[in-house]
Length: 345
Image (cartoon, rainbow, N blue to C red; front, side, top):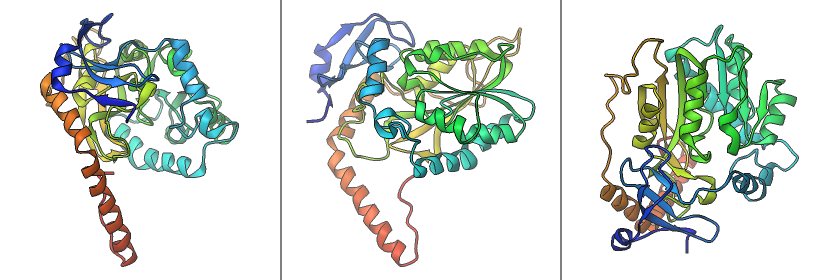
């Protein structure tokens, strides 16, 4: 049995609960959408803004203990890297994403030259190095020590600080307290912290007027790989299960102008990735929420989200078999000198 299982609609109706308040909209009304194992809290969905989150949330010490003792999904995590550096293959993948994806997104909106940059999830510093070469002054923050050690000791980036997810909203400030852009494209962050709203409010506060936020997140309603039965089966690692629409609402709720918000066709892993570009309004300029050129609909209803999660869970084996057939076809065609597109990546 999976550690997290979507419950039926009739059960969901019977499990309406009151929480201490949704992190996004502060509403206390929610319904249980998935049951957790003994190691994971049940997942609830806010009836007002439709944010999916663990309830109760972990305490800060419990989250720290989980990442030290159990988490192995990041190449720089203690359970994977130990006292060594992250594996070479993972570092090369990070460098490829930085060169072919992240820096191109940033340069479409702002030239790094002469800018002050804050990088949250700097990882091993691949993008930090590129930004410095482009003439930016960069301060990096990374939750996993093995990644930060590689950035400092191998890439020569003493400006990368290790800080646990439980205190990510307390990131260090540059000397003058303001930056021109905040980059969170290297790896998704909001799902891992104890309050995405606090983190975004802190980012908004340190950005100079007119400054940019570049953000990457995963959409739990759009899985790509099918290693697990439930799309919600991330255990304590993700205290929040975000979607395109709830991520957009977070950006709008914290005062940003949303310039881009879409599932990126060039970036996927276990889920499709959400690419967010937002701007802090100039002083005296009212916060517009959504830019006129961004079309983000209201989003699916509570019932539609539940039906989607139920469908993803109950068609898991069929979709997994389909992926395996594609992989086998890809290998055969590869031997014949052809290529076969497997995913959106």
